[in-house]
Length: 341
Ligand code: PHE
Image (cartoon, rainbow, N blue to C red):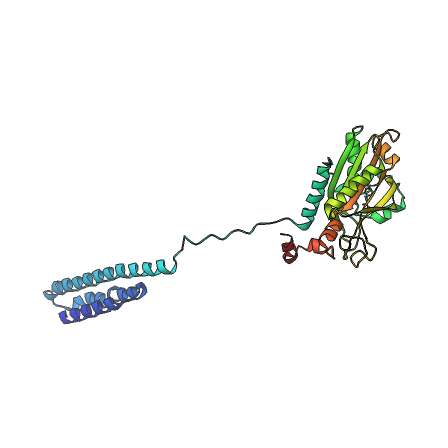
């Protein structure tokens, strides 16, 4: 039996020395020291020996077991150290590498244009006023001189929340709200905001878009004041050389009314494909505030005069950036938006 013990011991020691990873080492432990391991089985066989030999052999087997155990433990430390070293070198983090710069957002072209419009009018002493996107029929229509059955309502159909509430079709209701609030003080405001109409989407229409309204009310303001303000705006927005022209138009809340065109920035007014060979591009609607409108909101039209204008932010953006389809402004395709960085 002693031979057997020696043989197993040598074998075990040999195997342990050659082991390469902790999994194999564990297998060796099972092979020799496990419940059915080679040394453990020897212990079980002690019963077949004489009473005299039994303790001696028992001691030898235990001694062998301890040697194997110690060797496994020693090897385990070596392997763990080796494995840690491997892990450190493959998972190394270079803390000296420069960091990744987080991507910064930037303004949408509509925001850029709206900010620019606001900037220009703030520079002329206008204040900014805002109103709700859902407004009453009174503010959106009636107080702007649209009678209940006025045909001009047809051009501005919208979503009705109930008989009285609707999605506003223009920013002109903010004129009404400002006059109600400020009368009889003079007014010089612009009102930027989102508006809604029952329009089918195409290259030039969208059921929601943005406007900037302007309103001046005071004693003795004249049509030439409006023209001066709009000319300065056109030149600041589209270039020093721009001219404006007024064409007669109709709005229920202004009388007289005018559409305002700016001379084409592509051809300088000569006529080209951008301006449809006319040399002019329409930018906004305007007019003298109708006496009925002044009266309904608390200003005596015998004492006060007012001028108003309203422009589409999308339209200004399309002209300024020479974009040919309004849908590009709402689709938010990053390839498009990146160009305004
Ligand atoms: N509210 C008009 C529209 O949306 C524009 C406008 C504003 C015209 C102010 C005249 C004066 O069509």
